[in-house]
Length: 74
Image (cartoon, rainbow, N blue to C red):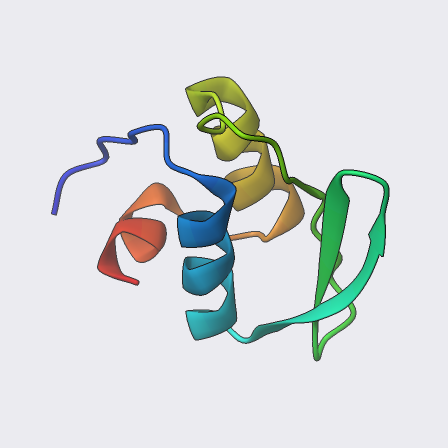
């Protein structure tokens, strides 16, 4: 599978995070904080535009600890 990453909406990103085992934990302003059972927290910006590729990469790799290939399979 490709390591290609496209910018997506926060709604689509949240759907993928839920498939990866995250649940909506709380929200602070325009940022939703999903939490995984193992304690990982992700800060997901809820804005009216797509999440930029760099921000999305940070969310996937650094916060959720997923590979791009795993993300694309969700």
